[in-house]
Amino acid sequence: MTVTEDQLRSVAGGGGNVVTTAGNKLGGIGQIYRDDQTGEPNFVTAKTGLFGTSESFAPVHGADIRSIDIVVDFDKDTPASNAPRWRRRPCQCSGLG
Image (cartoon, rainbow, N blue to C red; front, side):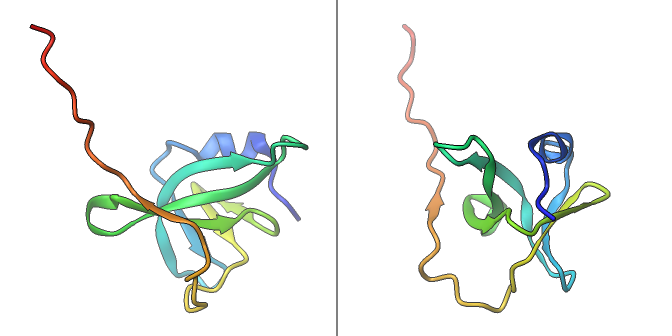
């Protein structure tokens, strides 16, 4: 069963985690990405790294919602070297003078 956008929206920003079906925590819920053509949710990011400064993608297909967590059909031990990742960088803002 694939989760709906409404279900994902209900847990996003609620302090939940992205976890595997085995119960392993991948990280806090980050962003939810939709397919450009269908508009259906297809990926969720898990905040990883020190202070959640990196995010890793996990597929939403086959995911489920448990309480405030998104449970993905994804194995934490599977190498994710081909999965997109990025590191957030602090905003470099100049003074307004």
